[in-house]
Amino acid sequence: MRADYREEPCRGALNRVKGMDFDWSLNPYMGCAHRCTYCYVRWFEQRADRPSDDRYGSSVRVKVNIVEVLRQELARPSWQREEIVVGAATDPYQPAEGRYRLTRGCLEVMSERRNPFGIITRGPLIVRDIDVLQAASKRADVTVNVSIPTLDLDVWQKTEPGTAPPAARMKAIRRLVDAGIDAGVAVAPILPGISDKPEQLDTVVRAARDAGATRLWSIVVHLQPGTREHFLRSLERHWPEQLSRYERLFAGRTHLPPAESQPITSQVAQLRAQYGVSDRRALKLLPPPEPIQLDLAI
Image (cartoon, rainbow, N blue to C red; front, side, top):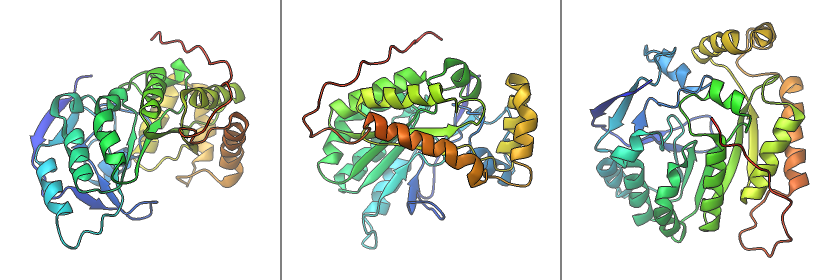
């Protein structure tokens, strides 16, 4: 499905965030061509009376003036150089970025202003901006988190139809880390009964270790209104045997109870410790384990 790009100016660049581990977010685009079936942003779209179903991602708003607006906001005397997270509500390296280069422009502004920032993305296009990330890292704290929920190609194709293959994202981690960038892997979200098999989790954590990931963390899927309906329809189409289980697990709730989610995240934590996933950029390392051969076929 091709996206329609709407070039629209924005009044503000920075968004105040509540209930997260950070206070400010920045999204050069709204709407996302990646169209992940479990994307929590579908909930925001439903609340704003915009399509959260299969139409989500067919229209992407391009904030054509966001670089200039961000420059003005960071120059305000009241701004305290707080951390800014790029990509909390839409992927900053979705296909539109290849044309518009708004994410790159925003990173350059934050680098100029010595402002710390973090990036969340599924887009290997981020390696294009290694030069900007290197320069910014010399001036402030810069972190990158690349979302790679699984290396299972069947699961990837059915749940993240507009994204680059997970192996390509893992290669991006290697290039970022080799360039000195603090780049970790987010195994998120994990889907119970679909992507939480021991061998699936082992494969992605070990591959992250082989790629040099500086950190690794995981979350189990949660389903807000808007997201829930779309995901369950996708589940009925691709994994009908799991439908009743998910309807039961998410009956009257958006997040799984700890008894369901903690065994999964604990297993990932154990694998992270087993494979020694950590920031090893400045350490003299022992030879790594044999790398996993990743099938790039789609």
